[in-house]
Image 1 (cartoon, rainbow, N blue to C red):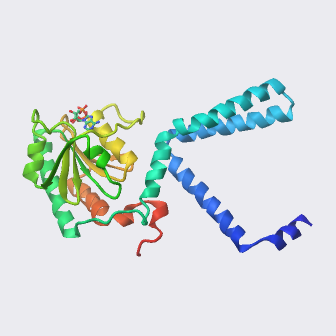
Image 2 (cartoon, rainbow, N blue to C red; image 1 turned 90 degrees about the vertical axis):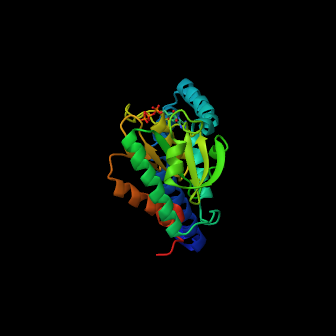
Image 3 (cartoon, rainbow, N blue to C red; image 1 turned 60 degrees about the horizontal axis):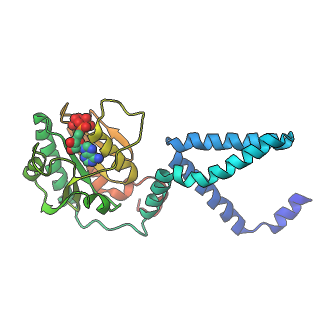
Length: 270
Ligand SMILES: Nc1ncnc2c1ncn2[C@@H]1O[C@H](COP(=O)(O)OP(=O)(O)OP(=O)(O)O)[C@@H](O)[C@H]1O
């Protein structure tokens, strides 16, 4: 009887409604996967189950305490999940509707990548530490503002010069926008990931931190080991051959649309 009524009142819009909610839950899961938010969510589910059990078994005091703690937790959630919420909003802002166009063609970007990698090669040999950020679709003005504005033509010589130890701009990151050096000496956010190897100091943690919060690609040269690594999407890619790093940079920078994961890829041309 109930099912009959349900079938008769079911509209096409209800399918869309269910699909949208399902897609929303799927992307929420993808967003929170591998973050500390998952453990918090598990804790919340446990609390909800205990709450239900205490209600069914008429355990009044326990039920009251659990309900009060659920209310407090609900208010605390935006504070605890601040980084994840920020990431979600930033991903939303990266949609095709809002994204900014790259003001540089593939050939110019290829030249920029070649210059960066040539400088990185020399700095790696000489054990000069460096942090080089390629801005993509998420604007990095917040970080540009923490450094010295340059707006200079990018060349391997200038990059090497910037990172010469004890010079005014060597501390911090260099940010590249549209194939030009936008700023140097910039402060990046450090990752809070506690699972990272203790070998990775603040330079590498800053590279990972920025890639967690934005879609930038960051090249890091280690002062200690001379290793060239890159970070993207909160992950660090280390001990790779140089041409593999170059290829990754080309993929990210010259074909940015194809590398944006998930939700916002649907409108891309095949
Ligand atoms: N938040 C930050 N933003 C930008 N640059 C930073 C930040 N924190 C540290 N750095 C840079 O990293 C340098 C310190 O690197 P540190 O030795 O701690 O890191 P590391 O990852 O072990 O790197 P290395 O392998 O080069 O020694 C600083 O002098 C500064 O240039």
